[in-house]
Image (cartoon, rainbow, N blue to C red):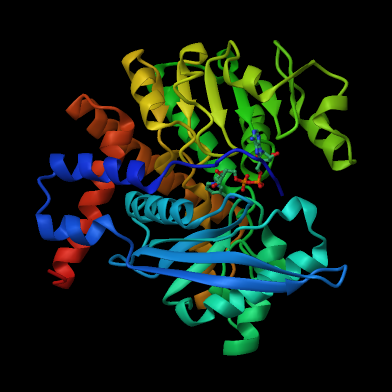
Length: 418
Ligand code: NAD
């Protein structure tokens, strides 16, 4: 769980620009644009809890349901000091496009509580989670809206959410995904986002004719997504040369031994006291001399100020919108290949979908099946996005939005909303 003073993501205005560009290309009718410009529902709740010292704190909480034309709303819950309505709204819209691009039967949503999990005790976090869940319970449901973990939350948070919801509606494991396996979670969910990132990286390298052993990678963030991305990329033969978390990082020109790094951190060590490599800052990591840069922490880290110094010629957006709009444009002009967030980090929601279906069917899949189906869906989406990008001679972000917006628009038309 993390804290940072930095504003994590793009604004909703920026998110809308991406939608408008796709809508222009698709010549989308104005009625549909009106519908898709604003989220369907936004809920703001106060989350009051008694702290361990006896005082009371009241945290603002949000749940935004962006669009549900293709199925129940789906999206994570973020605990972060900067989580506000604009950010949650932005992330909810990304979920609409991501689920559509992956052809999952979900709409898009996001939740957030503006709190700093790094300064709170387990008991305080449990109470925030329970109270937040009670306050949004009337708009979520197994066929309405299914939350999942995001920054600052994890499988344990989902167990508390499931329990709090169950106290109102009865035992309902499918109300959240990303739960512990012992409570109906799916095997392979924890590693799913990182695994998806690596599947996309492998597919891209095959297209470019580059062997993993020749490809060096730098990963920003060592949370759920960053740690699994680094581990699985190293297992696939890629050379992971740099990793950071919010505090600092390590660099080794010939590649880090990711398994010994993992053991070191599991035993309570810090990145700064890892024996191998040299220490580096987050700013250094973004401008490392490497082939692939994988931001896997917060949004808005590659900006107009530092994009000229980025040396990687491929960027995979494992985090949600780590590149600002202007930086995106400058990098594209320089020929940097950018794999957009709604494609690169979709592995998590894909396996969340598998978890939801397993809960409904009260049946468990094994890890082999989860991994196989994850690869099939995310590689299929990559093929579709890269083929359209080639055909239209446009960046992959543009082709990904074209596919996603068209699918949502089609669902709205078929339902007869307008
Ligand atoms: P996490 O809370 O598990 O880990 C976040 C990591 O980022 C930590 O290592 C933290 O130290 C680091 N970090 C925080 N602030 C930083 C900063 N200013 N500079 C550098 N590093 C910083 O979160 P996560 O679940 O791994 O999510 C990471 C990103 O991936 C987020 O953008 C999230 O929205 C996105 N994402 C997550 C999932 C998922 O399944 N968890 C799915 C899709 C997208």
